[in-house]
Length: 114
Length: 114
Image (cartoon, rainbow over all chains, first blue to last red; front, side, top):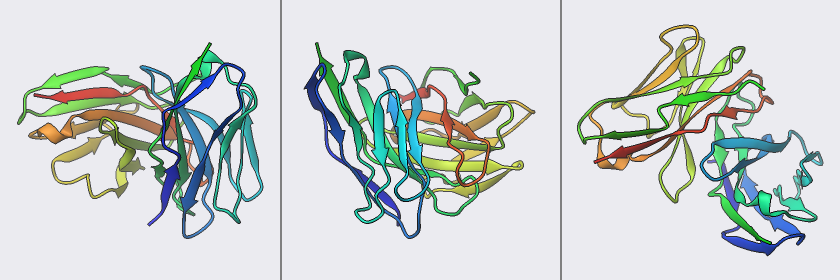
């Protein structure tokens, strides 16, 4: 079945460092891809999305490009801040199904030190 | 910005008791979901609900679980005869529908079974 694999955390960076969190997926079709973020004590917030190959999603300085050839959707940010400390989840939507479920990766915890 | 609200934020229950977790989805959304996250594990899909009926459910969603939309605003998850392994964070989500629409999540209910 469809699945998402993320790099294991925790990831610890200094402020202003470059961030990459790897995400690869397995799907039978062409799903939409998402990054969600969970700040401490809060729910899941949509960070960005991409709905077709070569689409780039971006928000709050974060970017991810839908790469069909490598089945990847890596999250990047050029300069992280302490406030970016959170758990990041990569997810895909159930292909071609109206209102389909999300399938999540295991989450990657990011800790940014001043 | 409209948001999904969940109550209570934390529920402690004795094993064998019934619990009802409550959610108020975003008002113009058509699809409703429950997910759960056992501590340290992935966010897992439980069930989706559309047009007053279950549209999809996972293997986890057995006869112990039920969902209901008792009125025009609330969406509930009932767990009958709770077990220790039901301890988890339960997230409600809603979406407008369509294969591209993102799901918006609540902050979750932490369920602790003693």
